[in-house]
Image (cartoon, rainbow, N blue to C red):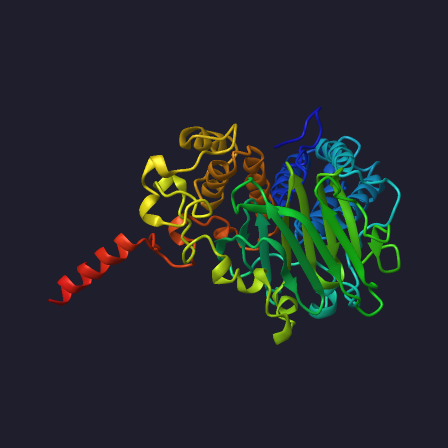
Length: 445
């Protein structure tokens, strides 16, 4: 990181998603530390570039790049920073820090597609609550929250990808059949339904080819809006042709197209929720982040929600959170239901043409997934099940969306022996259970 002829480097600017605000803060701290060098020059006593920089840090340090409105607020702060430097042009004429800051602002504005003209942030922002901003409405301020802030709302994350693999609001990881239409979320503010279809002829393996999202009407913030994506049709608009909901310049509900036909994000500021929809190969993935208090706003007639309560036991492929991965010598029970036959190679059915061996599937997944967590094992699982290499990208994209939306970094990675939420989970095979029972009997004797 640094400044020079190349300008101001903002970490992660080349990525699709924004870098964590802490990285911005680190860059600006580095800039601020240079101010003392500039103050050694005669004109530094009049140059107020350090005040401009500290104001910018104050305006941006609390922003959360994973939440809606980050780009808007960041651009406002940049314009305020730029205006401050212009006011100090004469007094900072020979100050190296000043000129580096001017170059840096220009670079950041290009990277963030910020217009030079527009509203600027105030160094003394008003704290009047905005009725269509969840954070402002419930917590008395329009600012976004960082982990550890007093009064920070609790967020929940849910994701669905692959064959399909479900990560619930409770951070439980499940693999399910759930063929047909199933509700993921159904509360008083948001409904999400997915449709899963068979992937491989002759197998019950399924994947998602349709997603329907209903944003329910809320006061004056938005009327009901419906978004629907199907394979080869991932639009950048709601079904009524609009791209936003609510009135005013700052929309309380809006769609942002990240990659045409492949990646769209829906930001609902009025309920503090973000939804990411992708198409990877022939199938769709979904990631949702929303406040816990809103996710829990439902009655007993809405209790069939996969994100909230997981898949029904009859639809589960895993056993108590343990995924019977092919890497452990067990074949996908979607293909074989008799466990005593699973370890006999001649009983394993023929995979589709172009399918993977265990070694090639492992190598393919390791190209993108460096940590051997449940996302990596799900990737191997899907390749051995379907023979479709696109499931590698699906697992990788799901992990990216998790890192962008999940509020607790320490809980990002789930490993197979932690998949049911316990500290030490084991395969629930009959042989294991019998051995464990015998061991306990011996101890009691």
